[in-house]
Length: 320
Image (cartoon, rainbow, N blue to C red; front, top):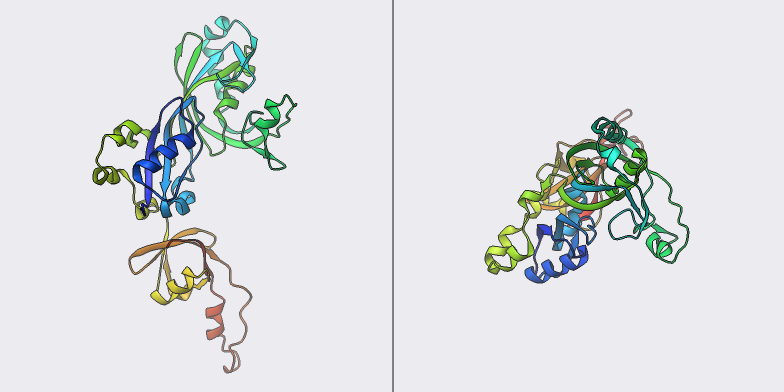
């Protein structure tokens, strides 16, 4: 069945992202499916699931900041920086928990642009091999720091030895690593004890459906939970091209901007429409070379050649 669209799924704890994806795919009888950002089995919350041609629009729909509600347990360090790992160090966190000012000062150190060292137990690859395989084998894994941005890090509550924090961060941030580093800054160690993803780009957990909710719906009603292709790029700059240009675009050829009406600027990714229908994504690129004198034209007449010097709309994703 050809199903196209984005499903906002509320993934439960205990299910891998791929297992949740496969259950959703079967519910919609979709030929093609993918998800927009892995959640560990111990994490729950917003898992965007893309069906059909929506898979090609992941960069358009989901390339934004993420939001989380995290539970950070003070006083215990683990091998994986979360509750799945073995506890390797314990310290009494009572004095730290009693000093609200010290907690707030430590949190402030991690707001804004920071260099973060991802966990050794992660799916990042080195020489084509995921780091977690080497870490599980007992190898010492050294991971280089990466730049990330923590836009919001707010202490919402203290629950026993746990800090409940609201996090808004850039793509690529490891909340496990944030928990680990916060514990180090406080001098008592910490790990991530629980995580709920609440935001991906402009989509929120409040709009998501659980697997149980979807299973209870009849197929014609269930499909109404999907966000359509054109809705996914509703907030993108768009280009409208002629029918003739659309034929070339679909074949992978760049289209001269004399055939394009756009509100985008050079270098931008654009949602490309033809005949009122979304046909893909494209990027405005510089012309292949400088303008030359128009062949056969009078001296100094560069009008025709100037057309060839206009930016080109190059396809980056083509929908079928």
